[in-house]
Length: 327
Image (cartoon, rainbow, N blue to C red):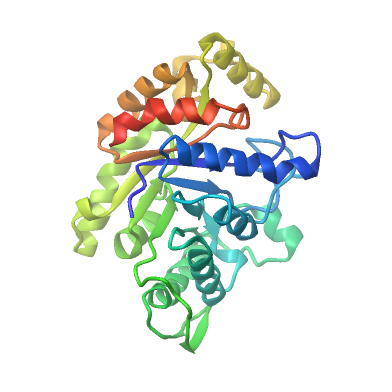
């Protein structure tokens, strides 16, 4: 597995009817595949996230959507960024992602994290628990899921989960990749060092040097060569051939969140959401990604394009601009 360039679809609010919704998702995934992206991602949420929209906005169940994409694409890897561990029994999740792998002909990636969106847990009836408990549950889940993906039977008796000789058949392969996502320097990075093939780091771009230092420490503690753990950064891309339109899309999006871009100081930009955004023409975005992300030693980038990724040609332009930087 290698994910040097990924495309995440975090919003489904850009169509006029529900019937048009999934065809638009398919079109974006196909465009990403054609443009050379390694993987296509959807979020594993039931409500839209606060920094993107309102809870009642459209949100597809992740694995149903990914299975649909598996039948309409040919080469691109498919994953959730990332699966909320608290939403599924871990043995069932191992079965689910393995089935996606079978359906897609060996293109599934298990993206997984501890879970964090409390509103979804409350309203859907999932136990939320404390921060510590969620990571304890993720640790136990990975002890169950990993052998099941590797062709082994799982027997585990933990505080949160229990399996007894759990079987996971059929499988296409015994090396289905595990991707962890998050920014926690102790818990998330520690689990990634022990279990993951890939770590998608979610943080402000200016924090990357510190994050990579922490990741090297966790790998040292686990006795792992950091070079064997592929890394990527989640970037919010707003790109258009007309750079001024891209910057207008950014200011309009921030205004909907109550943020006036013109009044922010440099310090506020570094501390806020704009430090995760890359804005301008595709070539300008590529230069920003190189300087702010890749030059720090990150292996790749996963981008979302909340404002205009649904527009035909937008994903292709970004993919072709970023591709040469990560190959």
